[in-house]
Amino acid sequence: MGGCPQPREGIFPCQGVTRAPGRGASLGETLVSEFVHMWLPLVGLALGIALGLVLNVNVSPDLARYTAVAILAGLDSVLGAIRAELDAHYDNRIFLSGFITNALVAVALTFVGDRLGIDLYLVALFAFGLRIFQNVALIRRHFL
Image (cartoon, rainbow, N blue to C red):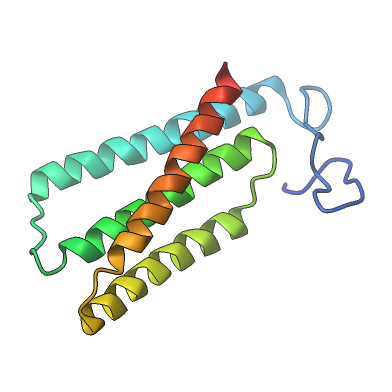
């Protein structure tokens, strides 16, 4: 399993190549695969919300800035991944590296700003906020 049934040349060798029933995947396999891919993120989201409510996590005011920029960095990466999937350009390596790098850079920027006595976290909040709104707009346009 894995890979394209008929890889093509170029940057995205699997772009536009699908596995239809009868051509490498049965109807049952296709339906199960689509079901798992559709519900798995929703189950993870519900589980995360439930754990957050049950564990009653409190963030100290000293770490609130770091938490805010890390959450916005993660949200930006997730919305970017959704947009890439809708444009048929999603790559898991790019998503994971972007997710981790965005969070680390945002937290490092906030840390340096705290040490210098200036609010550099606002730069990260502005940048991620702008990208989040752009990604949401493009996702919305895709469905219209």
